[in-house]
Length: 155
Image (cartoon, rainbow, N blue to C red; front, top):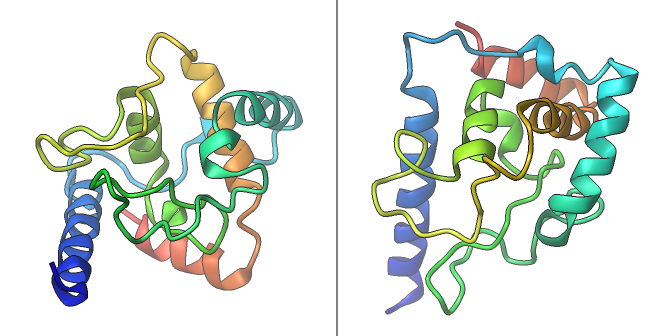
């Protein structure tokens, strides 16, 4: 397969993920107070849980895996960064929570989407998942990202 077909397939998959993430118009978007990065106790728990369960794929500094936009030999996309260089900040908290808890399944990913991202339901409590999201969000500091996220996740 040539590189333009591969790029088109990758862009289509990312586009479907973004559309699914934005498609639940019946639910509120934006920030959830359970993922408040200003809550010191929540942030401490999130830091610990992220290091134990997330950093092996998404990086100790939230940098993601190399070439995260290009499918690997197994056809799957590598783990994306959760820092400002990635796309995590484009999504409302409720979508990030659902993907973390249930894995990349409909309506947050196309049917039969294959990913190395596990579902953390049964492994992490809801409180731990929200705390990880608070930890991740604590790294989004630039004015551009914060303003753009607010606009993208507005109801």
